[in-house]
Length: 186
View 1: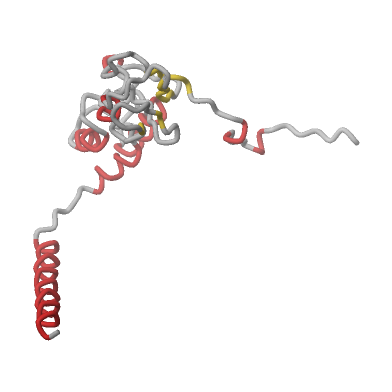
View 2: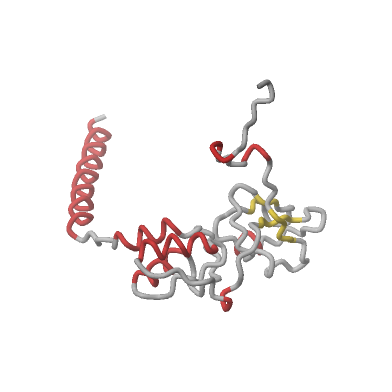
């Protein structure tokens, strides 16, 4: 019994020592993030599609903070460009055609009867919106899919389509003061 107690006390002591070392190191070697990069990153659509020429939204946010153009994000479109221009204090520019064009929001759809379960689309998806296993059909979690289109090209049987997002009436945002209402009883 005393050996077990001694072992537990030794492990607890080691845990406290290493915890203190890690706590000190995290404060001593902390890297301060640029708040402007975080603000820019919050405005970007987080599709991680790479259409801007950067591997994701965070690297593009860092590039914008360092002076790169604000008009390279097709998924964000004109609205994102306007918000970025307001934040950066520059004039909004039209979307750069070299990086694509603003389109209707789309999500991936896998024709499951044709899927061979190769997992190439799962590996290509930057947000893990595709579920499945090797040699088993895959499917897309629509709420997680950002419509980046990166899963389409790797598919060897071409069973992935990008379909427009259906917006049911429950998702409509009504601006009530602008809706004309007439009282027919008067």
